[in-house]
Length: 255
Length: 215
Image 1 (cartoon, helix red, strand yellow):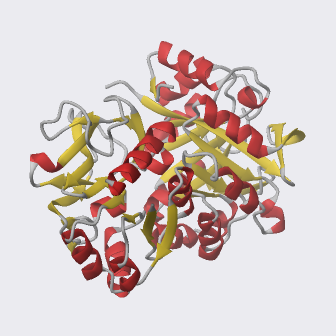
Image 2: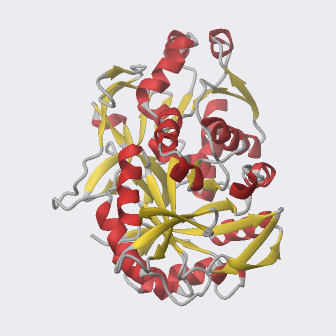
């Protein structure tokens, strides 16, 4: 059977601005996130992913207004992450129009949160976000980072992904910190290792520079691919990326 | 046209409200039997577990009200978990009774495909809709605006198995097997996918459902 993937636009937000960095550093302001979201929806993106990238530092998520505005005109799934620490935080952002939440920092600090969110809103709502960085200490392995790539957890990414699923995560958002923002392709070994280790869908991100990178990720096992720089800098449009994906022998929603 | 959305304490209800308002409908969020009994057309949304959804409806005393209204011919649209609850029972976390509005059961999606290879559960994907139940196309139904093969957004771990083939309105394929995508029994309609999250194709279903409610 032909592999089918979802194409997701990842919108990192800081102080109401869409931002983009390289390996999560050196952020550039790109403008109003809602404008980008609307544009990608009209172009035929399959899903949106909003991350408040400074929220975990301030223990709050500032995306409520942006999400509320988005779902007023954008009729596709919206996942929101950044600074969500409790079932109440999750309930609030869902009431603002989010369909799913991506949780990283708070899950590392208190893994039971994964179970609490899954029990309250269903596993399909609980996306475990993992920022993976190749480890210097453990050859051939990756370590999970948090606080937007600033702090390391001591968790082996593969073990953490398996544990997250056992605790109730219905999806994994896997981002390669090493490849992020470089637009030179994704960490295919990481994608293969994680997608083989778990049986829930895995959204892979970090490094997409063209449609062929998405094809490679899909063939390595990705169920969905998150794109940022390649779209934000208008290097390619959603239909252009999808055309390349289809040409590469991978299925994606036709637009 | 007024659309009454049943709010039993689960999930994002904003998108479904926006979608109906987009086509000029007046939308009321309700959680009492009186409000359900006064409705012209009902929507039962929902994500999460079957047991919790039915427990939410029972706690609010809504089960009999929904059954009475649909027996009188009031249209109802169930979405995702709301679609699954239309059936007789589900095997999610033990056997639990549903609303019994469409004969059939809700079962777990197998974790291997038709060739025995592992497949992902939950099933999260945009998948094409094909006519079922002996239909050649979707004309005369809320899916009339859908060209067979157009895709909608699915996110689920369980799937409905209608007892009567005729109640199956649309199917999609996952892992080489047909999955019930939409079911219809009289004026009760259920969509396993999310029409309010399926872009222009999904919006056409919302628009057509509204038209059918007015008919």
